[in-house]
Image 1 (cartoon, helix red, strand yellow):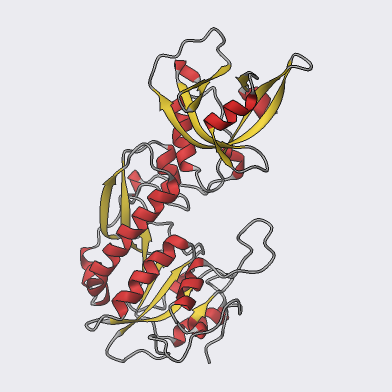
Image 2 (cartoon, rainbow, N blue to C red):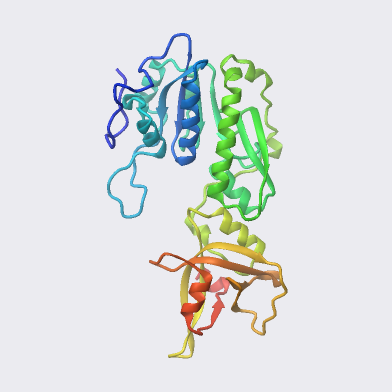
Length: 365
């Protein structure tokens, strides 16, 4: 019997489900592994392809992260975006697996029982041990949102944006035990605009990646993809470590372009924060204010000021002096406990109070 790993957060599939519990012997068994919303978009396309009249594969199972309390203050366990999509599409609940770790003996036993020909991962968020990789006959392939071997790791899109890249892409590669180091089956490049943020770029790249996957699936399943897959040049590899909340501070002793790229990269989670000073007429001093910086751009005009620390306002943006005589323009921000607001509304609410940037030393202390 297949062991159920999914908590009962939603109703199970109905008898009219288009996904039978047993695959046709003439079609290959494919198992999908993913967790966030970008993974769900890949799963949806994979499901559609599996239902085509000329489909050569069946979706045998879905593997995802266990239910969690994703939103702040929420106590109820919620399924991952992938699990929710699978349930909404009528996929059998007993074929949705949510192991804490992909190396659990019970899970691996059930996976073997499915006789998978191929496993596909897209932002699954769990390390796959060799015992897992040895199970599917055609191996495991991964959609990775970078041009491998560049940006191997957990945050390729975010680190690429932080570096200010103007070109990136998505790779379809075989999974091996080394981190994102398997042979590349196919890739696609795109140009990166300096206004795009991480969540939007992630969505674009996984959409492109799902197209690569559907196109290459016949060759992966017949084994010919392994023959043409190109080994990565490890000497050119760069790493993309997971973001941390401690990195979210903006330090204005850096140039505006560096800070703008960080705002784009850290959009969503963990976001970017800054400390600024607000004048206090009662004591003729300044109070410290923490803000979350939502949207920015680099000022390309020559800004004149007599105070190198003063924050100005022009057009629709706060203008913050940065290193190298550069200026960062903040167009949207958020105060603690408040909703996101436009810089213009925030400035009007100051009623003449002056703003100054905070020094790096004071932020770190």
